[in-house]
Amino acid sequence: MAELYYVGVDVGTASVRAALVTREGLLKSSAEEPISIWEPQSDHYVQSSTEIWEKCCTVVKKVTHGVERNCVRGVGFDATCSLVVLDQNFQPVPVTQDGDTQRNVVMWMDHRAAEQAARITNTGHRVLSRVGGVMSPEMQPPKLLWLKENLKESCWNKATHFFDLPDFLSWKATGSFTRSLCTLVCKWTYCPPEGWDASFWTSIGLEDLLENNFSKIGSETCPPGSPLGDGLTREAAADLGLDPGTAVGSSLIDAHAGGLGVIGADVRGFHLPCEDQPITARMAMICGTSTCHMAISEQPLFVPGVWGPCLSAMVPGMWLNEGGQSATGRLIDHVVKGHAAYTQLQEEARPSSNVYSFLNSRLSLMANSGSALDLLGSSLHVWPDFHGNRSPLADPTLKGMVIGLSLSQTLDDLALLYLATIQALALGTRHILEAMKEAGHDIRTLFLCGGLSKNDLFVQIQANATGLPVVLPNQTEAVLVGAAVLGACASRDYSTIQEAMEKMAKVGKVVQPDYELQSFYERKYEVFRRLFSHQREYQALMNQR
Image 1: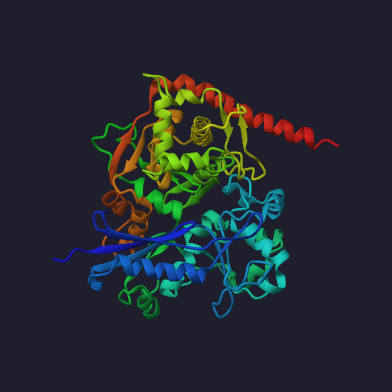
Image 2: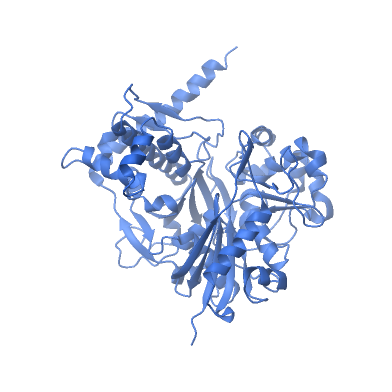
């Protein structure tokens, strides 16, 4: 009997990836293509939906090359929660002042709508209770409002379809306008079973979206993994090199796909505190350019400054809370590449080519014999919100801070700043966990995936700073496995997302915290919290008239 496969497609911030995945969750092949990012002005980040779809087709053809088409049972897409704008003929509509029609995607990390987000927060509308009480500029309502207020003639009046990028991909593949509950609930304020709250859109000045039963932003919804339309259209099948009618599952935001790829794994035999506990004792962390902290519950839990609760946004029938850090991998790159010793780092790391592996090794050499390298961060402290705070403070205006710098700019100083940044990001996770615990979550184990989960030091410090064990998946590309889970469910080879998760997600490695560092991280966390208090005091002082 021929082996059956599913294709998972992941559109990240800077690249499109695809994988051919077996029924057991093993990656048989994978491919990656870069995608363009334009920054026409500060805090404006845009992409092209045409280029993104073309790259999706390229990577799918690569991973399915040589495979019988009828052995590919289903396709699943995930993507960043970016905003795609199309006209009545499904052609791109520009989202920039220069009017370039190919630049029709407002990226997730675009913060142009910070002022609109603040205004929406000030309405105090009831829908805000499901986004932690604060509207983020990374969500779609403020971006839509910005387009109406700033590009009314060139964009808003021409736009007929506004898609979250994951929904654009599933529409492109199937022709179905049905939106995923993942995108609409998490980023658009949709609330099942009631649906859209017309009073919210009217109160913020977007009453024109109510027309034709909200057709511009989606009037039909379904849970992730639900089969869409009649599967791949003939046109999409030709583009992707697959059979028409191949099942396509309703899509997910990329972080949520990573959650599916790790959080449901069978942990029996690993002696973890979440063993014999419900899945609600686990938190998935998808660590890449940014980090998303995904926790699920059987009943809705409201966590100040944390998005959600969102019903069926990741696991059907379960409520999702999503914390996050807007810049993690991006912050580490920024700190390291901006240091005076970066050129020296590149030269000395060249034989291995990975500067972060080199820095990890150098820190180990710098540590006193027999003591943990974590202690090297005793006198250098970072507040990591260089791109604002997503959770749990929900304040996009916050800035980064570094305390403890000297005039020295050696390679050792760079290594210490790198360490302090990683520690600050881990303490940010602890801050989010603390807020979730106060609201009723009981999280006992962290499940990590994404690019940063391949950095051993980052993973170990997440465990040390939180005091929780960390589980890594046996497939390093867990996001792609999560996307493939959607295709497996759409094909009906698995009856539920939960069944597919348990069969396709597997534990690869467990990293235990170093409990001897508990008091060190207690002190480090107290300094971390005080940095925030001081920043607030400085802002208040400078704002005095």
